[in-house]
Length: 351
Length: 284
Image (cartoon, rainbow over the protein chains, first blue to last red):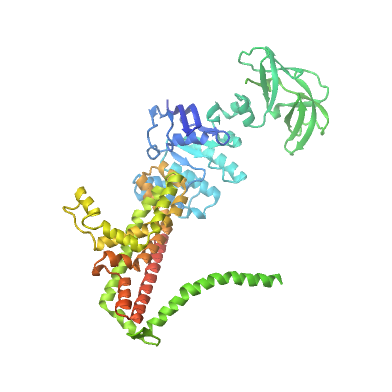
C-alpha cells in the first residue's frame, strides 16, 4: 500500500501509557488530523512518525517498508513545530535552505528553490530578512516553506497555528489546505481545535487516553459519532439517557421515541444514549402532537444574531437547540415548548 | 513632601553601589596611580612625589616579552578551556535534572580550593615517582617516568583546571535555555548530531562563549601562583615580574607602573574580543 501504516504501536513514558496499541492507515496524498484533548497521545503519535521518539512496541511502515529503526534525520519528513522552531541566528533564506545546505546542494540550486518556495507561500522578497523582523503569520509560512524545502514524503504539523490570533488562524487554515491540495503531499496535522480539523482534513482521527476513538471524514465524525466521547468532543451534542425497547423504539424517561438507522442488534431493556445535534432539534409551541415530541421548558435564550440558542429543560436534562432566525418560534425563559427529536437525526450510542 | 522622601530614599539606595565602586575600584586605582609616579626609595619602598622615570622600566625588552607571553598564555588557556568546557556543559544540560545538579556541585566544589593548594597538588601529580607520569608510561605515551613539572604544559594544565568550573557555570544558563525544538527541527531536516552542534548550538551561543572566554583570559593574564610553582623562569608571567620588582627589588613605584601597563593590555584584549565578536555577528 502506498502511504503510511502504523501497526499496533504503543508508547510508555515510565508508568504512563501515552499510546496504547494504536493502528492506523494513512493513504498517500491525504490530509489527516489527529484530534483530541491535551494528553490524548496525538503529539506522541506524531513524534513517533517523525522519528523523534521510538515506540515501546509496534512498527511504522512507509510504502510497506519498515521505518521504525530509522532516525529522524534520515527519514526526510518535513515537520512544523508548535513553537515553529525557526533558527533566530539565520535569515529567512538560510532557514528555508537549511536542509538543502546539509544535502550539499550548490548555492544556485539553493537560491532557486528558496525563491520557488517564497513564491509558493506568497512572500516573495523577504529572503534577506531576519526572523525577528517577520510578523506571526509570515513566520508561520516561512516555517512551512522550510519544512517543504527538502520535498518530504510526509508533512507533519504539530499545532502550528495555535499561536496565531483567531482571524489569522482561520485564513491560514484555508491557505494551508489549498497548499496541500496543490502539492498533493501526505500531511498530518495535530490539533485540539475541532473547527480546524473540520476545515482542513480529509480524514479525522479522534483520539483520547492514548487510543483512537474514531477514524472518518469530518462529516462522518460529526454526523455519526462512534461513542459518547466523540459525540461530546466534536461540536455540541445533546446526550440523552434512554432505555432500548425493540425495533427502532426507545423510551426517553416517560416518553416513547423512534430512532433511525439502528445497525446493530441490541437486547431489549439495555441502557443506551441518544446523541442529537442542537441544530437538528425542532421546537414547536407546547402541546404539539406526533412522534418524538417531548414536552420541555425554556430556561435561557441566547440570541447571537445569525443563530438563536435555546437551553431547554427536557426529559430531566438540559438540552440545547440552535435555530436560524427564520426557524425560531419565538419564546422566552419559562415558556413551555414541544421539543421534536427527528428520528433520522438521533444517533444511538451504546455504553 | 512624599516626592522629597522618595528622592531622598532613592539617592540613599543608589549611594550603596556608588560607595562600593568608589571604595573597591576607584580608591585602589588612584592609589596605584599615585604610587606609580612616586619616588623609588630603597629605605621605605616609595615616597610621594611626581616622578615619571618609573615608566622608563616599561621599555625593558624582557618585560615586554613577558607581557606578550602572559597575553599569549591567557588567550591559549581561554581557547582551550572554552573548547573543552563547551561540549562538557552541553552534555550536562542534556542529562536528567538530578544528574545535572550533581555535576554542577562537583564542579563548583573545586572552586573552594585555593589556587595555592591546587598548584601544589598539580606539582605532586606531575612528579616523577607518583602520579600522571607513571600512568602515561602504562598507556605508552612516555617511555619512562619523568617529572612533568616545572614546564609550560604543567602551567597550562593547572590553569585550565582552575578556570574550567567558571567557564562551565558561565555557559550553563545559555545552553540549558537552548530551545529543544530547534535541535529537533534541525534533526527532521537531516542534520546529524555533529551538524546540529556546528550549525545550531554553536552559533546561537556566541555571546556566552565570548564572555566566558574574556573572563578566563582576564583571570589568566594576571596569574601569579601557578607559574611560580609550576613554571621555570621562562614561564613566569608579568604578575611574577611585578611581584619580584616590588618585593625583591623593593621598587614599589616601578611595579605600580608595570601593573598599569598590565591593566591597559587587559582592557585592550577585552575590547578587541568584544569588537571581534560583534563584527562576526554582523558579517553572517
